[in-house]
Length: 162
Image 1 (cartoon, one colour):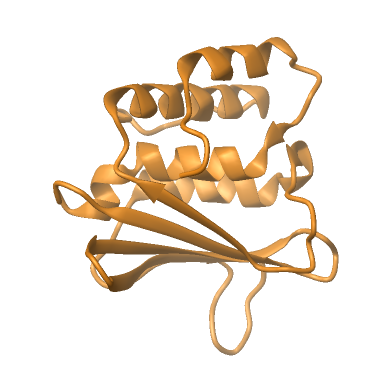
Image 2 (cartoon, helix red, strand yellow):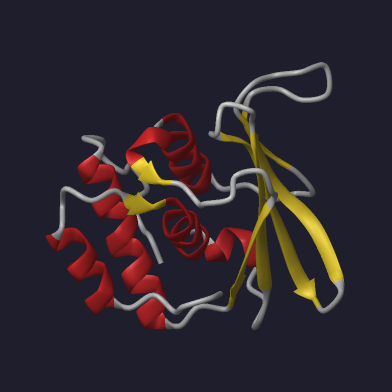
């Protein structure tokens, strides 16, 4: 994880409500609030989000990889904006992973990309790595995801976030 999330910075971000939220930060928070679903109770883990843009400068897909053992990665989930002969549109979980909350967040974020500040240099693939979050990281991520849903006028239905 690049810069650690903090409750103070989340609150400061939402004071400036006319500014768009950073898409990468929201994706990182989505992983943190879904951490238990993606790590299967491992003491430490690493989650990686890989994403790529379509020619329209919007995200085409993202993939969530989980590493519970150093050097071993499993595809946990992918999300495609449009279907092809190789995959359907929307979220799909693999390798025994499942997270209704993460699927719900990804659906909202991917369908409302124009509401977020997208990464620059869209001609490249993006990669985010998230290490085992602290309690404060989880609380901050929870706050950011709830604020994202509020901002987009949608209720987050997941009963218990980190």
